[in-house]
Amino acid sequence: MSRSRIGVIGGGPGGSSFALSLTNQGVDPRDITIVDQAHFPRPKLCGGGLTHRGTELLNTLLGGHPFGGGETRALEFRCAIGVVNVVERGPQWLYDRGHLDNLLLAECKRRGVTVVEGERVREITPRSDGFRVVTGPSGRDTAHEFSWLVGADGARGVTGRALGLAPGIVGRLIEAVFEPVSSQHDPSILYFDFDPILDGIPGYAWIFPYPKPSAAADGSLTVEPGLFKLGIMDGRGVTPGAELKRWTMAYAERNGFRLAEDKLSGWPEHYYAASTRAHVPGAILVGEAWGIDALLGEGIAPSIESAMYGAERLKQALDANTHVIRGYERGFQYSLPGRNLWFQEKLANLIYGPSPNRWLRVLFENPTLQQLAASGEEQYGRLAKTLPRLLLGFAGQVLRKGFPSNRPIALLPSGERGPTT
Ligand SMILES: Cc1cc2nc3c(=O)[nH]c(=O)nc-3n(C[C@H](O)[C@H](O)[C@H](O)COP(=O)(O)OP(=O)(O)OC[C@H]3O[C@@H](n4cnc5c(N)ncnc54)[C@H](O)[C@@H]3O)c2cc1C
Image (cartoon, rainbow, N blue to C red; front, top):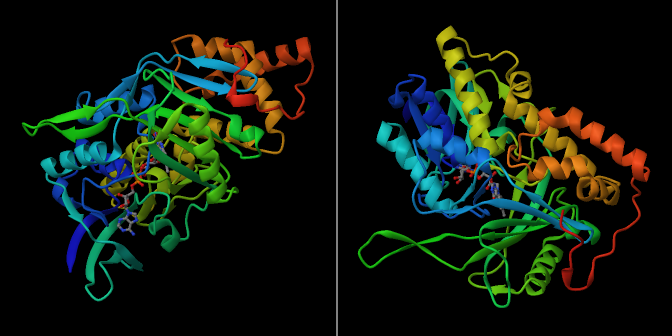
């Protein structure tokens, strides 16, 4: 039996950034235990792309640009009716997730946080003074007692389920590593194709460069050049996995790529909705266990943001000697990251909702949105503040060209694109 004041279930970016933020606020690292079922570095299915605000968050947490990754300079949104270039006010960073998550967890260990690896949480039982958590393969059980429990266990986490919290929309994703055969894709761009919508899949497909880490002869870390990750996100989780795999292989071939290693794998995503609950007395959810960006499925930056918020609120509760955090969900909803996740949720409801062709026409034909995207002054996932300007732009579009129709948009042969803005 082990006892600790704060037990964090999950050592991904949500769990490790929660622990780092808590120690930054003066909580003794010896009071924090992170439990993860995996041994790090562990594989994690992910495009590994951090939009610009994600790079800023990592910079804050680790005090610099972590080694062993890649960098891009823009995002490109594409579909049969057009191309929108998105230039943020700084670059995007890319990482292999096994490598990045290991760096973050190593920083927790360096600060003195206890990290228990290779123990799967199987049971969570509320007690009068906290929670009893049972880990381990059945037959080799270990019990842990925590006064506070933090669920940072991702899309398939047990904490939310055990506490009756955070049921939200769950998406379905497929991804693999590919290499170019005839592709001319620029490795300094992150590509997002909304063509799956034209085939009835409420989501998008991506092409990201993949900075695969490998050890050099002298033991130092290098990055293998020339690889890409391609995948597809069904933001409503309604398309069978076999159909998503078929679509991804056809997409890869159309774009001049072939499978480089392994096979196509799938993993769910859990999206943020303002209505979800993430707190019961003595326990909170952070990271993807609470929910991530519903539009593009960006999860690293939102997980770090909700973890930072959770750490701040938990520190206040520790100082006030209470197990109840009043307005935990509402407080986040009104914070800058919460407002933006709410905005992404609304956009996803439009683009992946009943009239997707109409909202694709707005996305790809609205001059205000295109100006904002290309300005080099904004950041993806930080657009909630531009809502009044976007609404005015939409009104202008309607006045000039009428209300955009939901008439089906045809997928062009061999994935050709409309004009670039
Ligand atoms: C195919 C795909 C592509 C993606 N691409 C991107 C991208 O390019 N950029 C981006 O920002 N986001 C991307 N995401 C989303 C991103 O990967 C996640 O949102 C992010 O990892 C969430 O971080 P987290 O720490 O909350 O959860 P996770 O990273 O999932 O970490 C949860 C941890 O909890 C542990 N755990 C789970 N259950 C238990 C248990 N019972 N007991 C003990 N430990 C447990 C797991 O081992 C894991 O280490 C992608 C997701 C998918 C599926």
